[in-house]
Image (tube, rainbow, N blue to C red):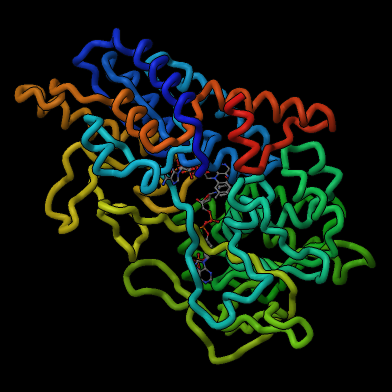
Length: 490
Ligand SMILES: Cc1cc2nc3c(=O)[nH]c(=O)nc-3n(C[C@H](O)[C@H](O)[C@H](O)COP(=O)(O)OP(=O)(O)OC[C@H]3O[C@@H](n4cnc5c(N)ncnc54)[C@H](O)[C@@H]3O)c2cc1C
Ligand SMILES: NC(=O)c1ccc[n+]([C@@H]2O[C@H](COP(=O)([O-])OP(=O)(O)OC[C@H]3O[C@@H](n4cnc5c(N)ncnc54)[C@H](OP(=O)(O)O)[C@@H]3O)[C@@H](O)[C@H]2O)c1
């Protein structure tokens, strides 16, 4: 976190005090932590539901929009159009964005709860599930989150520099949509990526990449692959790509049939994989990039290279078969006692994200979420809801679902907030004046935090678009913390 001279902070506070001193003292002061889809949808719904609501969105980054900026793949520009809707919310005169403000270091939960009537936590899932097997710490092993943040120019990981030069083979563990994203970025032609908003350090590395072969490895079968059909179709359609799916893996059981009967997405994915298997050539031609779908393999151990000390050289897998969990209709991977090694020089673990706990917040460590009922945060003993504290998005339900899922999630959380406000109206809990925005800015000023407003973000946005236009890209992301804050402060 970087700080601003206190004179600039004083100016900022004075500006805000002037602007908002006219607000009714009965304003409902709301703070949303996190400016991803869950945060923005919540803010939008609160502003719509309450004319007297004043909503502040804080984010630890100087840039808004969460995974829409730092997760969604650069070759999916249409998905990012939702940013226009979020920007309209930020421009609402009763809404403010304060970037470079980290819950847990710039400001603490207990403080936010004192300053605001309602606090909604929507800070996502910024860590990774781990396998907990030997060799996970070897160099050349990264989580997909790290790799994605790197190619999307997240300022925390612009220095990651994954080694794409000293190997021709990458293994991606997991078969969800994030796994498909990272595999596609490794396999797509850099010329196609050059016209996207991919970070320039990633584009340069991909231009020089030696990776020709990607294994997408699942611990279960093709019926259980976690990706969706549109995303699968897209990777299968990469020009000139050799796709390998073993026919033996496509033999299905009655339990698989049952799974597909109950889930149309699974059926479509399976059909696409079957079609790709039958239409592929027996061998790749020379120089052709290769994508191998490998099923029924559970990672047991990362193998260390003999030549490069501390670097990964492959994975030791146990072959699996499916076992039905009685009565659930779910099939899980069971080891067979047979093993196989696969060589590689890069591993991307795409086995799911994980939320992080913060001080003073009840947290379910096994599920990696904040315990809640319909968005109401439950106290540590799960006995009752915490007053005025809510949760939304990946932090609420775990790291699954697309952008639009957070819209329905925000609906539910805001409905709970509304019920609570209604219930409390006679005792006028919300009539107690709370300092809200002014209190927040005063605290941040006293800590010399450089607050990045939405207008400041728009300076970054303009600069990125200008830099992009010079080289035929929609934007060239600024990926360095100091540069981001300098542009914001201009
Ligand atoms: C790699 C990837 C690609 C995806 N691609 C697509 C896609 O193409 N289409 C689609 O529909 N969905 C996609 N998704 C899913 C979609 O991005 C998520 O459903 C959605 O972003 C979750 O929203 P959220 O607001 O809960 O979390 P996030 O989007 O992660 O937002 C959380 C925000 O909280 C901030 N934050 C974190 N910690 C703190 C803190 N301590 N203090 C203050 N702020 C904090 C973060 O900076 C971030 O801005 C993708 C997901 C991933 C991981
Ligand atoms: N274009 C898009 O719309 C888009 C793009 C990216 C992400 N998203 C969404 O974002 C969400 C997160 O995606 P995700 O890919 O991170 O998660 P995901 O869909 O949950 O996939 C996780 C994958 O990891 C595997 N896995 C988990 N634990 C494992 C272990 N211990 N060992 C081996 N494999 C393991 C899972 O296999 P099992 O099934 O066997 O557990 C699954 O294949 C999803 O809802 C996704 O749809 C959407």
